[in-house]
Amino acid sequence: MRKSKSARLKAGAPFAGGIMPGRRKFLKNFAGASAGLCFANCGLARAFAASQQPAGITKRRQVTLAGRRVRTIDIHAHCYVDLHDLVDGHPEALIPNGGPPTFNGPFLSPIKDVEARLRYMDEHGIDIQAVSLAPAYNYWADRDLAEKIVTRQNEQIAAMCAAHPDRFVGLGGLALQHPGLAVEQMQHGVMQLGFRGFEIGGSVNGDELANPKFDPVWAKAEELEILLLLHPATFVEGLKRFQGNGFLPNVIGNPLETTVALTHLIFEGTLDRYPGLKICGSHGGGYLPSYAGRTDHCAELSNRCKPVKKHPSEYFKQQLYCDSIVFTAEGLRHLVAEVGASHILFGTDFPFDVADPFMGDPREVDSVLGVPGLSESDQRAILGETAAKLLGIK
Image 1 (spheres, rainbow, N blue to C red):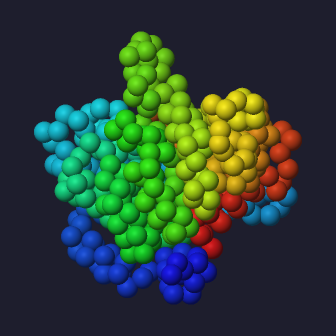
Image 2 (cartoon, helix red, strand yellow; image 1 turned 180 degrees about the vertical axis):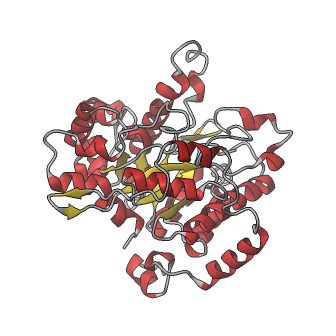
């Protein structure tokens, strides 16, 4: 029989804020194996962080609204686990839907750069990060290799979160190309590693997320009552046209991948079959919120857009969420008008507004505080209240 979230809380599941016996054993083993690695010399990260802050202890910025403290939760914050030894010799690791075998940059490592990351968070008013992988999913890997890859990624994220439970919660990785394995990883990640959700790509080796082969994954996510962060690794089918200046695989490709993935989940009935499934679309949910009227119009008038149980825009009032990374005050005001403040989660794309300022929003919490017309309750919802509910943060 399925246990409710409240039942799992009473049973001592990770949402209760404690560490389960299995998780304690994992942490003890990880600590012994990684002694000498954790919190070692941060190299570039420490040097960069030192150049960005005054000497001594960084004063922690506390965000307030109307004199009341606001707990800020960043839903879109990356780390990168070194997989070089596992993917070496696999050229597939270099394709956009896989990712580079190494990624050098400050703040990214969950075993070396944590202190620099915390100092940055303190300085910029970010209380908690929901830590997920940089989008290198390696969906090309066979089952055995995929299990090794995800195990390493998830154990390092879990150890980082357990060492600082008041500052980090984990969104683990999944081997979606092997749905049965992904289901096992979800169960283990939530019950043993304390994860509050998982990060997924927008497609898997050309298969849409709405493909029925992935239904067991959505069923398990619904059962566990966790959040899925949909973060694209570009729109692979558009790469030929994305060549040239403008960083188009990211600027256009990422939000397009999110748009296509979410639209299929709506129109293929996946969200109807799993009404408890909760998904957050990165980068403002792609283009879908801005074109909600167009999809609603099709659902109302054309047999090509049926059957769906409700207007496509209504899924953003219930099951779908998006992050706040839209870069302008007017963009965020418009997003609130389309989907509601309660379905927008504060995100920064950390550390990509710092290490190589290309697609993160360097204004971070001020990007929400500076939007004219947002009520205090709207700002509180976006900055952390909704995320706390979805992630089980007490």
